[in-house]
Image (tube, rainbow, N blue to C red):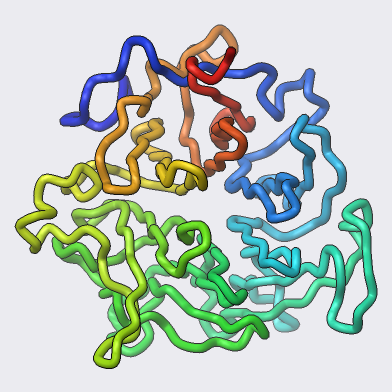
Length: 348
């Protein structure tokens, strides 16, 4: 793909993202990823990478050095709460041999009995399997995000969405003790052109410090690959509504909800200071940036501007993204690396 999805604004000529070397995962970095799927900047300011093909999760420092690793079967999503517990979406094998989707909680710093640990003990600290889809072998979790108060949301996918009561594609809300509160009824599972239709979720990310979230999904059968939901609580309503809704006349020209902008929006990251949001598209090989009002940002860039001598074909199916301290981290899954970028205006 040459650039960002057609119909977007042109790139600025004087403010662009510039790649910082070396990428994490190059041979010179001492790390070898295999289909990395997600990256998380933790509340402890360390980096966590779901190394899907190597069946492990890695902890790295800001310099890209591996501090610790732990085995998980096919990890796909990560989140961390304010207790510094790590939530991992992966697979587990049941006693009957079935492989099913699951959510694990890793007590990185302190377990439920009050025992303390160091990050270097990541390979041996306690892990709890807090949720499994035991009765549904084809369901998997593709996203996790923590809300204020340590409630969390999990995005789930699967091939069977014919059930009105319990379709595979759902967003589940859990309390801090890992008990399911409810599947969110604010989104509609199925095929449709409305802003609330979900079919194949790929990730979910909460707005920093809020109960709002952005859900991404593959655009097969739906018009919106990214949906920004905002939490509202009144005497008459308690739940989530779309932040931008094409049914409202004042929202119809908002860039964020231009139909069919994405092919496979795969992950989201927020700039906590500016409120900007980054979305990577695994099919269009692009990073699209919006401000907090849903306006397209000219620093968005696609495959063409990601080409370098080491990566002459640009991005190859990027599936994860993070932003921290003016640096954008893109999980370039097809190249088995995490690539680092900074705005040209922030280099000096």
